[in-house]
View 1 (cartoon, rainbow, N blue to C red):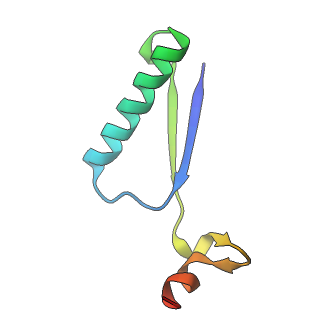
View 2: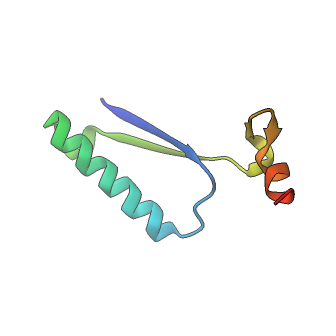
Length: 65
């Protein structure tokens, strides 16, 4: 079964998550032509203190702005 992993910051609004999962599933269905119930979409939310870019934590980059 095809699967998609989405990693990013927290999405507070559950309706936005529902729409994201629906739209990703729509794209998978279009590409693979398999029934919708075979696709798995996983959302992994990473807080800014757990993500580093360019050698520094995102939380620290925000604080320097």
